[in-house]
Length: 447
Image (cartoon, one colour):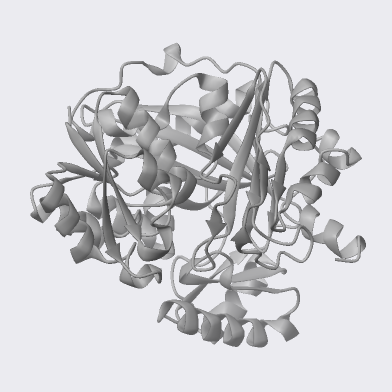
């Protein structure tokens, strides 16, 4: 096992990784920008190294500085968390070249799944169901022909896309040309790559993802599904495990498909296969070759520490359990609480003047904030994650309502008031929502 791990991230996820390391008896190194000198992950790690000024490009994305921090401190491995360099195959290669261990998948799998077209072709060949559409990049003429075959509406997507950028819907043939040109322009500006592909646009799908773990000895297991259908601009807001829309047979079916596919691929570490789900059918969207923001809800219903398993398998250990050992107990919900206006989602950096976290049975609060902490304006606005677990979904919702009413974050705007409304909405209580529900709700509420 590793003796010292460098955590190449910040905020709540850096703290989450630090906790797992400490519980395994592993020393930790925090890296930070000048803006994060007083951050909680810096305070709680065994050692800390400043790797640059506030902008992420000069600090948390600064590969030479991170490698140098490893060499200075004697860290043997790097855990990238999520975001930043977590899905950067070049960084994973560099880490390996320096005789260090990248706690994540193999670089070739990061590269393979990082390109949407390659990922879709790969999983299709492995037997994972995909959305009807192009097999790769499409020209305007090819797009028009294909759209006629699969039927409108269609979705134009950037091959190097993410976060909803380079993604446009065409509901009719008249809208197709404009959707193609605007998707290409957005993709070029955001990713430096203007190639696009086409998929059938599903009207009211849910976003269902399957968490997997794989070791270097050929064992792959799934840890069930998460429902991430409450989204705004393709960004997840609220996540549940399991999904209100699936039954045990459907869970077993899609879990089996995914584990068989990733066993064939020779995958290593944690990963998440994301699907759209409509009318009892699953359609592959993408694979995330990293730890997910919403991993705590899976940990709540399985009792498995996903970060601990990431570290163990990266060190060459086998998974200590089989698929038959995994038992799904109860229901869990996570709210991503951002430092933003709760309805316009305008960022709200600033100093936290009051802070009280909720507690009690079945309540987990993942956060790096504290009274007097100043949330900097340079990074993602995620401030904290509230996770609740109970024996069924109804009790989980009641517990979430209570925990939200206990939570106090003063001095900045947060999205807490939005969640206090959502947890009381009939559609949410009934589990009757799709990926379009939240945006429609916000429009109807005048936001």
